[in-house]
Image 1 (cartoon, one colour):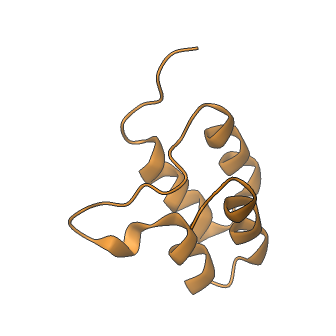
Image 2 (cartoon, rainbow, N blue to C red):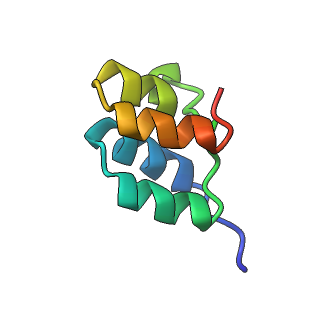
Length: 68
């Protein structure tokens, strides 16, 4: 399998914010970094975004995949 794209973690954060669980599962299966965050803006951390937007299922998926 090819290495994940460097922006896959950012895409995961956007999917988490919007609660797009199937997209999140695909990104995680492809190797997206579950704890990725944009160093310029730490609020891009996927778990924080999911929780901030009330996306409980998305947050659960992230935690089950090792988000901290």
